[in-house]
Image (cartoon, rainbow, N blue to C red; front, top):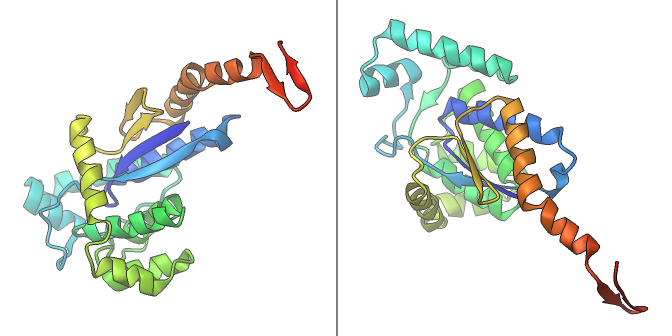
Length: 233
């Protein structure tokens, strides 16, 4: 069963959604039959990749929120994060263009480590206060997952994976996705936002029951032949 997840590293609800989704999946008996594919989405591609802003400055400049309103919103997200096991440090988070981070995510996907890289980027951004637009930071994260630093450097200094990122973003538009996180469950159902683990568990179970279990039953119950002959069940 395939789960496609559109996400952006600077989105706190994407981190919360990831944790709740993984908590739900871990409880299900078919968890080892699930393939997760992370897809790129940029909440604000207009940001300058050479600049960083604090969370408060970004809310004030981009959204027009006064500091008191921004602080209230951030406190609410911190409470949600705590419920998902995340200790957000928004006072350290650096807002910047995430395109380079998505390049590293696609490199990690090539090495079958996209989920690990997604987690590493979230920690770097929301907890450690690192600049996830900085090449050396991204190369260090890649190296921490066993990805060759020279390969990571080549990716960041070229247009490798640019087309793949663009394809993910265009696919999001085609599917009417305007916000993240956004989950498509085996091409049949969609879950939008940082939903509770219980909702994810119910949605995953329903999707499995409707799209995977019937196929398994047909495979298990059908007549077949093997090297010893043929028989019907």
